[in-house]
Structures are given as C-alpha cells and as structure tokens.
Amino acid sequence: MAFLLFIGALVAIVLCAMIVNRLTGTKALYLETLQLESGEREIWRDARADFAVVPRLGQAVSMSFARMRRHTVLWTDRRIIVSQKPLFSSKHMITHQIHFTVAADSDAPAAAREVFGGFYGRGFETIEAEDKSFGQVNRKDCVRIKPTPASGAKLNLEEMLIFTDHLPELQTSLA
Image (cartoon, rainbow, N blue to C red; front, side, top):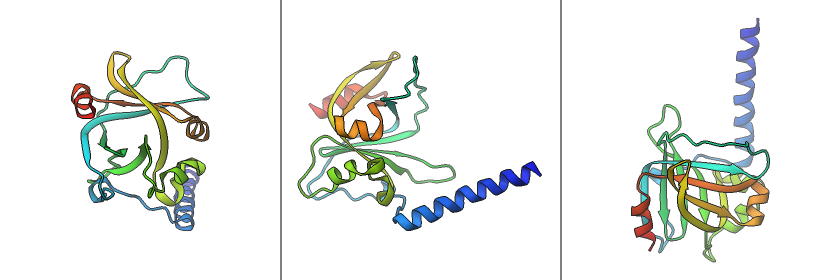
C-alpha cells in the first residue's frame, strides 16, 4: 500500500509540474538550438565545467564542490549561458543565463527582476551580475561571479562559481 501511495505522489508531482508549465508557457530551451543575438559572438566554451551557486541565507558552515564535469558553459561578449544534460537526453538544457552588461534591446533586466529570475515563462533563471574574479575554491580553479544586490536578494545568491580545468584559457579569451 505504501508503494502505491509513493507512486501516486510521484504522478501527482509530475501532473502538477505539467499544469504549471502549461499555464506559464514554460518550455525547455537547449544549447544546441540556441540562436545568439545579432552581433553577439562566442568567446569561450567548456563542455566539462561545473556550476554552483552559494546561497545568501541558509549556507552551510563548510562547503565543498565536487568536480563532476557535467555542465557546459558558453561565454559570449554579452552573457554567460550555463546548460546541463538532463537524464536520458542527448541535448544540453539551459539552466542559467548571467548578464554583466545588458543590451538595450534585451529582456534580461526585466526577467532578472521577476520571481525566480524569470524562470517561469522562460525555462531558465536570468541573473544580473556586477563583478567576476578568478581564483580557487577548495584548491579548484574557478570563476567567482558576484550578482547585483537586487538579483542576489531576489534569488538568495551570495555568489556563483564556475569550475573549469581551462581557467588560463578563459582569462586569455577575456583579456
């Protein structure tokens, strides 16, 4: 009987998610089908990176970050796009979009100010960032990205970390 209740709860969760996605118009966007904006150019790509967020509230006293190499990070001259391959999929689903400077024709500032960073209706979180630095966390090379105070407060973000084995290559590309 407990197993049937468990299966029923899983089915209810999936149905609820389908209804919310249908009502909000949320669809998954994939990196393979992404069209860059006009005038935007790719600067750097790492298909074996890791992306982590450090929460502003509810943070653990000691945090460690495993290097699973399961994210693809695309860095353009306007934004950073983070994607991850879902279970049983061959495509990379976009999970986060980070903007340092926002183009006038972009809808990123409005999406970043919405609840959950514009996730509902777009399919991924949009975050406005104010600064980046290169260094190490737990002896692992990474890029530390600081969100703007408004974006960080809305999404409970202290900072975002991109771990990569190709940090010198990224630094050279951005110079």
